[in-house]
Image 1 (tube, rainbow, N blue to C red):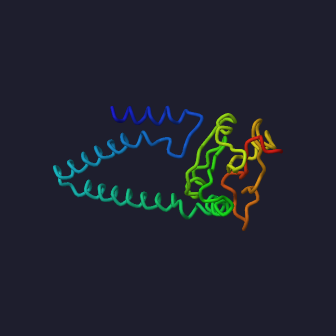
Image 2 (tube, rainbow, N blue to C red):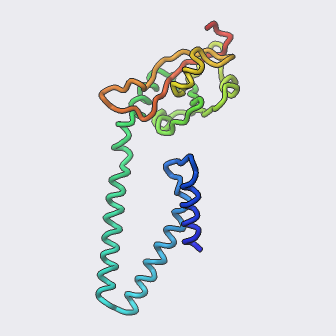
Length: 193
């Protein structure tokens, strides 16, 4: 039953059109259980038969698994890859522009890596109506969004006014941008455009 669960999990989750980096996470427990049962059965066979060739296979499997785990850990070394995605560098730049107590809103955009490096409370909003609830007349609200949203509403959606303060579209030092984003200063529309 665990093998069936694992197979169905991988199959149906792989069919989905939207996949996060951890989309196979629900399949891990059953995969771990299957692997543990295999090792347990292998160890019981070794202790019962006491054959040398089976012991060699077990040691080979253990060494191979350890090497694979080591290579995998090197491959997913996120701190090494993070600077090349510009999230940390642009977060530092953004934090120098924004006051420590000012609200940051991710509007029609999710940028988890940037939010992590900003290290401040933030909101993730998807519609202009949600955004308008946060805007004020005299105090700016900082909005991070993608360039397509700015093309759609160059001065801001109805009821709001914004202007661009910064962006990571032009990366510095030859680094690649992890995703194009724009930092906007937004007010309620009672402020003149």
